[in-house]
Length: 435
Image 1 (cartoon, rainbow, N blue to C red):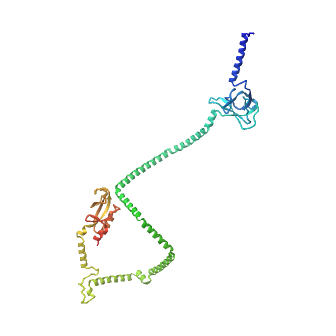
Image 2: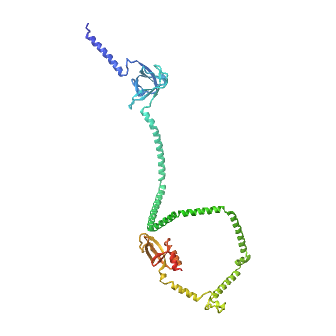
Image 3: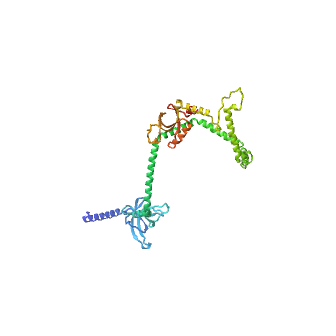
């Protein structure tokens, strides 16, 4: 039996329509061969959520939104019906959260399972939650920054008020004066620095000598460390001995002695006793002074004219010498003049004192401003240094007097001695000049 073409075409159309219907539903997520179970959730806002939107679990699609309807009896909430595979069981307290799939605002439902061992029944209404969209999240993140920016602007405004107050006309004048004072201060500092640099450069040799002397002193201290320790030990033993001695009784005895001295001095002040009369009575002092002068005259006359008082032919006491009341002896003065004359010979002239005023590693021009006002400046070289002296003296008294006058210009000036233009020690010069 042959089937007519019309029947074949009709069957083909029916089969094609069925396949088309099934394909469309499959593309929408409806699989008629896979049974579904439905659940519900209430939301206050379902913006961006559409029918056929995904229902996911941990990012995996397990269902889709079947229907979205408005329920006036639920205070304006929107009821969303979604279907899941029948093999999925939803624990109690699971939350159906609407979240954003992408930046374009596409929404889906995400199931956040709880750890409860009790499960929802098919058709139950789940707990709902809506995730903030990108705009709300950005607004939430930017709100603290906005508040901080507003606070910052207020602070900047307050700071600007302070700055305007500081740079007001009155304060500006004060600031200008302060800057002028600072400029003068820096100018003074530059001038002082220049003078200090000049002072150091001019006295570099003296500073070198000072540092050399300091180094010599520290070297001596180091070399005599054992002796210093011994001295400290001796001082320690002396202090221990003093601590063990009867110092308190000694002080008490000293106090008693001081009281006795005070009593004696009080009696003397009141004129009691010989000392009191001597101090308070001028006549006794004058008599004693006159007697002392007469005794001096008698002793001088006795020394010069012993024959006046001792007449023995066995001894010859020499000639009689006339001595006046002041003790002047013409012959003695003549001997002194003769001795002074002999001291002016060449052996004395070759030994003299000079005043050293400066020492330098490099030579200094004698006509330099450093020696302004000085005459008879001499230069000699010894121990790798140039040394400069001024003046000449033949007695230490004259040398000291010359040294004191020169120290007004050179505070470190000191006395040196020479023999035949060679430096000798001052003690050696004293043996020759002041013997």
